[in-house]
Image 1 (tube, helix red, strand yellow):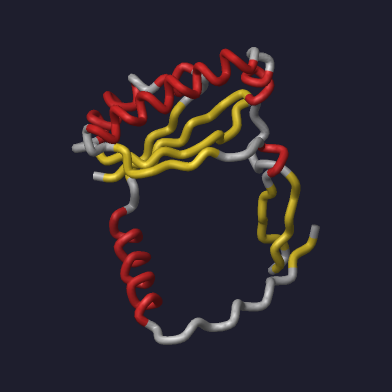
Image 2 (cartoon, one colour; image 1 turned 60 degrees about the vertical axis):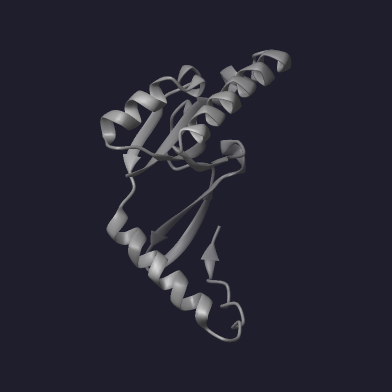
Length: 144
């Protein structure tokens, strides 16, 4: 089963840690990611820039509006995602509870929605077999 593990971080607390300690913490995370790779559990991941670089899109009166920052008002913000292969939720919990990132902030673990992901994969396959690329769609009108 595939799981999406979302790591949250209090950016102000992390920023207050000396850079050498930040780098050491990141190296611990990378080393554990390598352990997950060796076991065939690490499927990928992405680190995210800070919440101040985020925007949130919301539907309002039939249009899309854009507001700065994340939608949730909390001290901890999504810092990155890790894609994990595990037998079941208990196995995913066991694997991620040993991840050094879990000491920096909470990790949310959710099973991937395999039925929707299968539809997306089929759509990607169909799209890839089309002969010529199409022009990009026009940008939607948004309010800021």
